[in-house]
Image (cartoon, rainbow, N blue to C red; front, side, top):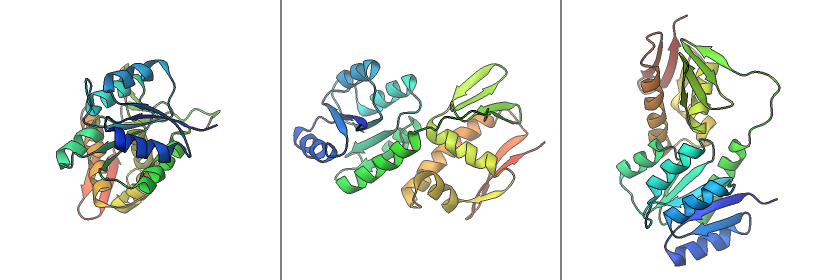
Length: 227
């Protein structure tokens, strides 16, 4: 069965060309309006979302935020003509998995879709994978960090990053190792994406002085946990 994509793009010519290529591999549900797309997301099941930023009624950033409130796991890819670094970072902070700048390569888009679809397919498990880090309890299967009865919901990428840090606790992780493990590539923009996610984890852990994510200049990062 083909995976189902929510594709939101108000440029009809670009949408036709992109959807025509994607439909060779996926079921594509196309909308030109952010509000209508969100209404569909609330009632239908999608495996991945491909969103333009400049949309009528509800722009791509607003749409991504609304989608994340309902579903923290579904992969989101932005396709946008907005090239400013601030726009890319904003998209990632909202929980997007990637941000491609127009004009983009269909081959690259399909490659990224495949990577995110494969990573979002959680395998069933019969064991409890919950672990403790400082005063927090981490549930990687449900992308959740809990402390004193309060739960912080992570995105799938944030959860994967934290799991990698915990598996290598008190050990330096090179930037390229993290990027390759989580994004499948080691390039500048993915590095900026990683920095955004690490910043958010640091803000969550600031309440616990026994946990810190150290920046190792020109090398990488280290999760330090005092037992």
